Length: 439
Image 1 (cartoon, rainbow, N blue to C red):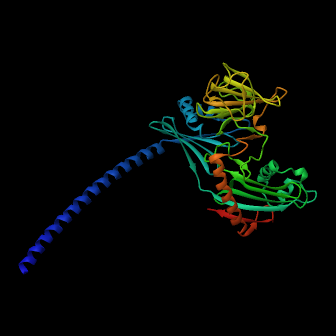
Image 2 (cartoon, helix red, strand yellow):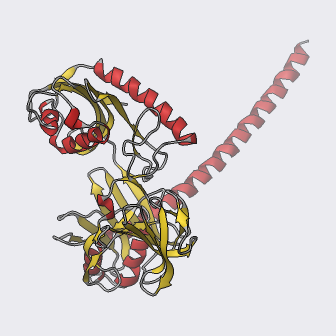
Image 3 (cartoon, rainbow, N blue to C red):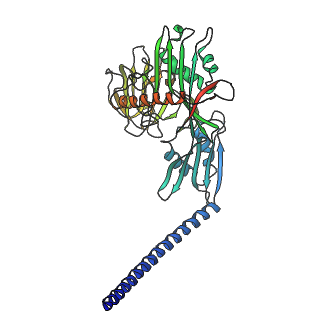
């Protein structure tokens, strides 16, 4: 018996020794792998340090009346191979950034020891930074979103004798920067000439702040008006999956757009690359009048008629490329230019939202986009954005189902905010409002 126990102990010791040896071998292999990773990381750190040591930053600032063309032109003159490199930077960034430039905004370019572009940086606001970096495969775009704090506030009030809408909105604590937006939402649905003292309203706003103090942006989540004559109305902010979607707007709970007689947008997703008015032409570099709005979009994107009408022009020329013009009931005419292809001919009757062509870059064009123009009944070019636009008169299908979920969530948000403590609406007033942080 003792002999058997002795033999078992010997076997156990041998097996234990084998296991320890295996563990040691595994640890050695793991250590070797870690050493290789550390060597690789140190090599990358050395490369980055070398680039940092041999790089410098140049910049240029937007001046009065300027667009991206001016700033890029000056930057190109400061770097080697600027025409090509910064041209590629613009191509990489153009589908993701809408350049609504303000005086004083700055473009930053990091260059290497050869004065070649390594990185481009532009911040549209305190929390959104657009970066284009040089890689082995070319220039690559990325976006940096800094953390924000969101606050929701409920404002309630009653129309007073002799008060204006904007005046009473300001009086109940709505920030001046948002008064016009709130007023616009309410007036889309309420006939205010028929409104009377004592009529009540309730507004839910959401504001975003950086570092809890720098205001970044705000939006009207909900607006309600209850009047003796005009009746009860509600408006809900609908958010499509794509933040650039033209469906992002205010609707009733039944999915009706707040504006019923407005034009539809010519594209489902909007990115303005050039506005109406005097601009520097992207090809000639000269200041000229721009009789429309340019919407950037991928090649082949479907173009829609903005209203019912009859096609009066369907053709091609060297400047406008493939173009279509549609005359509407009020004798105004909408124009669609630089298209890849046309889907309707002269004399065709079109309905609102009907496909009439596809986005292209024909004629005198720097890249895929739709030039959308509008002439009034007198034949004068007008700003298309001055015409009330809607994506659709009524949300249907998946979008309507999405709206219903958002309506339920908005009602929940209103109740949560109403149950929150009352604090000062802002630093310019003593008005107290219900406010809460949004997770």
